[in-house]
Amino acid sequence: MKKTLYILLCTALMALASCTSTPTLPSQYATVDSLPGIYPDYVDVTVPKNIAPLTFMIEAGADDIVARMSVAGQEWIVGSEEGVCPSQDQWNEMKETALKGDGSILVEVFAQQAAQWTKYKAFHIYVSGDSIDPYISYRLISPSYVTYEGLTINQRCLENYDENVIYSNMINTTEKDGQCINCHSYQNYDPNRMQFHCRQHLGGTVIAYDGKVEKHAIGTVLTVEANGDSVKGSGVYPAWHPTEPLIAYSSNKTGQTFYTYDPQKVEVQDTYSDLLLYDINEKKAYPLEKDTNDLDCFPAWSPDGKYLYYCSAHYEKQDSNLATTKEMDLILHYREVHYNLYRRGFDLKSKSFGPRELVYDAAADTMSATLPRISPDGTKLLFTRGMYGIFHIWHNSSDLCMIDLTANDSTGFARPRNVEELNSPDVESYHSWSSNGKWVIFSSRRHDGNFTRPFMAHLNADGTFSRPFELPQAQPAYHLQFMRSYNIPEFMSGPVTITPQELAKVIKN
Image (cartoon, rainbow, N blue to C red; front, side, top):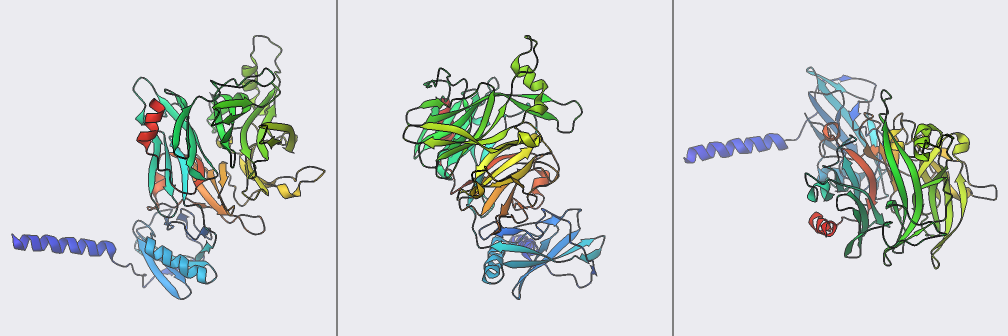
């Protein structure tokens, strides 16, 4: 018996030693003057000082891979059959050493294929002294058009790989009654001041505000009429006021139509939309004055709370046939719908808005602008621009653009710049700024055209961005095997501590 235990113990120790043994560089290899094709593509990216370890693999596959990562005379040999996966301690040591020098980590990759080792051209990973918010949250959803039962809102620590569910559809979903959750949002990055929507079964808006969690019926009860025009639907696409218990929403009626052969698969139309302001304490929604032919959507506050930015399209029915509704008419002419960017001044005391100002006339460029987001210092407006419509996540033409708000003068706002350093041939869509204004996170389908993944990039001193990098994972191949899309990536100053069960109870009651 003792001999058997001894053998088992030795076997376990040998297995442990083989898993933790230090990899070595090959003694013989061929050298090529080309960069390695790695996934995720972390070649020459800039990362924050508090980011989790970057792991990568040879995209075309390799029997083995090892990398020498060196900084100021120190080196770390990292690698295995799965890829290059530095430990948290190794990675922290690399970053700390790099920040004492020029901020760069030199990476030399060796890959073995068919018993032949190859050394590729070296590249750098640059470490910025600018930190990033420690958490992000996102909605994970399958890329289908009828299935939503498995949908969750998750949060992820950017400093390591920890991830957990904030809320899941399945908790209050039954075989008979389905539920859909969306539009998670935070006031000034604060996880203690959050909201998200529940649609269909047990529908409503869940708002957590400094320890108090309630479900609100926004836009359906206790509305306030403005010039005889009341709120016509529930509030969606939220924008928290930076400091006050106020949330701007748009009230939308959307629908999907499907292509038979176009690779873009689906088109989402906004056939009715309006803006409203919701007072959390009063539980009242205040509609904004509007033209009934205007489609107003996606509000966003300036950091000082003095302006509300939004996108709007003017559309009048074209078909004189009375049997054709305006909604059907708009769907038939969806490629002719172009959204411009506007803003309105806001008076906090009276909770009233001034006349709208044109920020960018996208329609004049035969383009459509949506999702305005203002940098925390109030100097830059980042938005998405496509050829038409408002749901650019389905449009390959969708790119990120930016307007310098400091250039505003008597002639109007500055022309937008296409942020080429962030864009790809595929979709770039939802985006948000870090709390210090040094980083952006955005959704992109650049890798396969089907799944949205979060990418981050650093804002340089000259107003350009560094090469974007994909959300790091413990296993390099994770996103190649993960069949969910990341929706609405938002920065957070910390984790949401309210449990899914607590949220479920509020929703149910």
